[in-house]
Length: 246
Image (cartoon, rainbow, N blue to C red; front, side, top):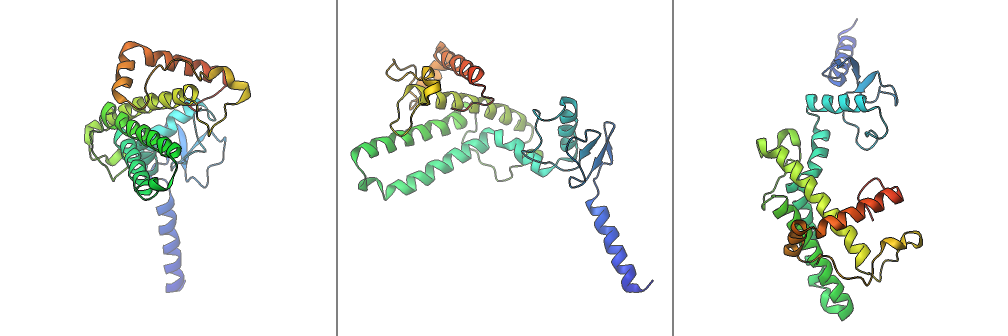
């Protein structure tokens, strides 16, 4: 074998070793490279995180549990990034970015539109501000920022678990608020579906002021928010919705 041939074979071997999973077996299942894993082969686990395609609704529960445990063991960066989508700081940052983007746009446009559109814009801006405050204050992001977006390398250390839990709770609060707003406050740009008309309460007395965080906090304490959440839950069950969507 010539030196060039040996060099080529060595490079191939290095590449193969580099691509091989760091863990060969995990909880009784063989770990393979993601491109080698075939869908529904529950005897094996992909060695990398595959977003969207794999979820608890499409896989055996015990396999999915082992899969996420493997991703945590490997501290897979893509999995770590996905966990962070629920973080209160990440969600507050995203909401603030949306506020800044819209503020910048309307600074030069607001004087060119009708009074009706201006009122609508101002209301939407108030809603965006409430969304940000839900994550920043109720979720306890507390004006902090993060550029890492990787749970396994979180700059906030032991607090990372609390930030995920707080963010998830804040997100549930906000999704209920959005659902309530669409189903109680009529929007001329949106038409309620005929088959779901019973879930729309246009013209009925307001339960909460969605543009006022103080009122939302009071609603969480005095039971008004619970009434909305229960109605939302009934809506999801009857319509077959799996997530908090309109």
